Image (cartoon, rainbow, N blue to C red):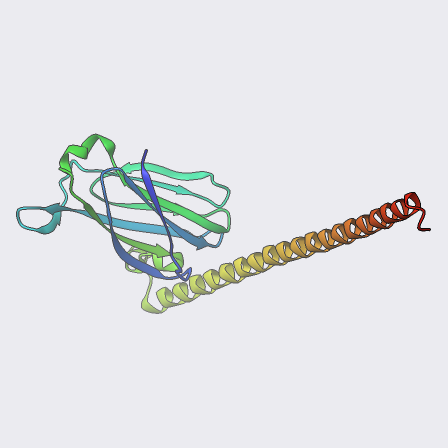
Length: 216
């Protein structure tokens, strides 16, 4: 079975995150991102294999592939696809909350590892940072001012999504707190009733004991 590593990335929603990590032949690496709803995410990655002769990481061969799987907060798979040694994946969130992004190498090419480690460089772009504005300007023939206005509009839209998500989190936290407080209250009441019942039982037991001994 594959060994899975879970990493919690404290990444602001409309930001860019770049990192690299190492995985073995049977490992799976998963990252958790908190994402508002209706937000586009783009991930770019490239892989390197360790060359024992040169003692350094070199670009991986084309035969080596990476499997990418993304799950939403309801544990529903929204992306599951095989890519090459270098690739790009895109998805849009439809449910606010923690999304799990997992990567692992294709099992059919393990012979390429030769027992070594694979280094994966991962770049995740979230929100309006995922847009290629140079491409948008060329496609829609936008002036510099029009492009800047479009950027500002999309930034405001992303900020609104983030605010809505924060309100959603606050509401869930409030519901959890109220539920916890209610449980604590009921547990206190149950404890009190148990103590009262034990006290009454002890008093009756002592009374019966004294009556049996003809002390009362």
